[in-house]
Image (tube, rainbow, N blue to C red):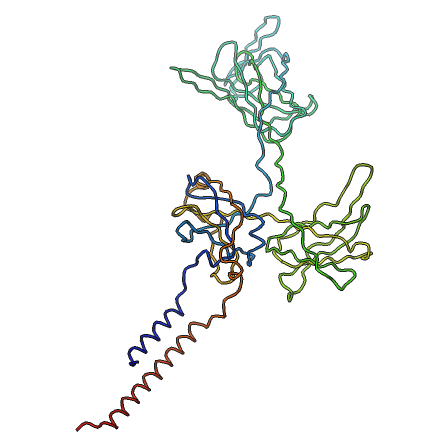
Length: 454
């Protein structure tokens, strides 16, 4: 081998050592296909529990998304919501009509009072305009036994057929004391050439109401309400966390129970399940990421289960800051021998995966690796970040993941041999090249000595 060929060989070795190959599906233990219509540029899906059983990093750095060509695509993680969006329904409300005071008409400079006897008194004023009640009818809306209201919609008319009226809305709990909730607002209805302008919906401060009073506050005959429909907002329903049972591990301590979660999940809830009914126990819950780390306290409190007649009551789940630790310890602070059969349930809210539908589908979520370089996902709104939030949300399509299948298998969960730092590789390469050059020069000199030229 010539000196030149040796230098080329060493250069190739250095390039192979320093360069990093792009990730592939086989670098990851398992995967899941994503089903979607692929009609939008972004797909979103909630990560199932199997992902948290396989991943090795709390930041989900060993998860990537690949298209059908095997190329990774940009992705991000979004926090899972803790509650569902409030449900809005429409309900018809009863309306009662009351006879109000004699009509009082107001404008910017004149007040006209007409009594029931027909006497009319004109009072000239130069003060600023007021919005006093002028309708001889008052409408009371019965909103009892309803959930929160956010708006009401009127089917209305007036005897003189006007297309615009101003009204005020007040609220009361006892039909005696009234509080203004909408000081003044406009109802409008206009038709022309087959087209229609309509304003019949009035927004209310969202809360529960007992009674609502509607009164006209501009000049004109009484308002006629044919019907009232309310937009009722149900309380947001909390989404149940993802629960799993931690595996009991043998303990040599009588007052301590050990558990292996076998998950790398952001646990925020815990339930201590007592085997014996009508029991209560004070506990201290701790966790740690590995067997060498120090235990950290997550929650202390009472767990109980009480049965009376047909009613069973259990203590609410413990809640604490998210901890992605694998190992958990339950210290029983009193009567430990009674509670050795207790079990531990842990709960968390899985993240939502969002990715760009870049390239051909179907797309594969690959996860679980100790050999692939950690991914650098974007923040939740980091994909198409220059768009408005409303436009971005319209470009997100719901996806669904299929059951887990093996990719690289168990080998992907085995760490690669420790890499030699690039600087050390370069230094050794330079040394080898230098030695090769010296050897080449020595051999050349030796040939000259043995075969001197004339």
